[in-house]
Image (cartoon, rainbow, N blue to C red; front, top):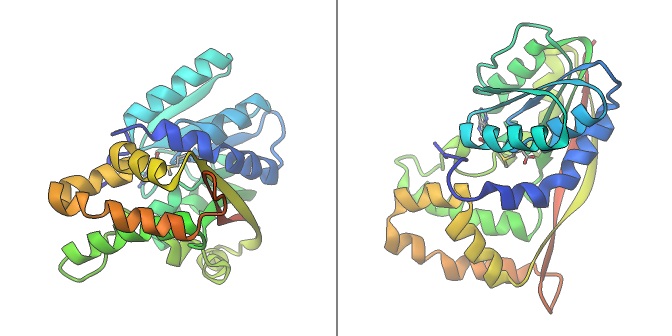
Length: 262
Ligand SMILES: C[S@@+](CC[C@H](N)C(=O)[O-])C[C@H]1O[C@@H](n2cnc3c(N)ncnc32)[C@H](O)[C@@H]1O
């Protein structure tokens, strides 16, 4: 299991902030509404919803990140309830929220049971809004280097659900429709290109391998030599999709999925 509190997830959270804006915007939250941010990390979406006057709860498995989120809320002068918990067993009553959000968070949990939990805690007539990755773009290609290495380690040749983005389940609009169909959810999906920037492919590879929780989790499993051997394939994958010859820029295709519950 990835310890998302290890390393410096804050660097990635800053890069993902525009996606939180899209998710909160798509949820059309009004003041006083009850909002849950699932797998909230350092609280990007939860804080935006709180700035808009919502009553917000943020849930994440990583307690260190919840501490960072609480510090941000305190500094900004907004109140958010931060709870350590799992997306597969959300610490909330049935129908507790008007809007349930997750920005590249719940995608690390197995889709069917996690979707059922999102539905359970969202009130009738409420909405669920998610940001997910489609797997298109150089960032996904770079993450694929890690996923393949982890898959080679496992007995069945498949990386564990949270060893890499669970793109197959959450990044496909038809699969999203199927996931929420049992609850009568009407799914609307918007694709958008999320830009990632760095000084160079090498600099981003170094940041990931030295500081990104997903990569640090793999270092323990792979051992130092196999881990170090991933550096060149990772840089190659990033270079191949680099859109900026003088630095690094790559566009990852993301989905903003809006699920309207009956
Ligand atoms: C890529 S980060 C996204 C964080 C945040 N939503 C953001 O926009 O920056 C993934 C987050 O999912 C959390 N996470 C992964 N699996 C989880 C699970 N089963 N239950 C709760 N949180 C989980 C991690 O702790 C991490 O904070």
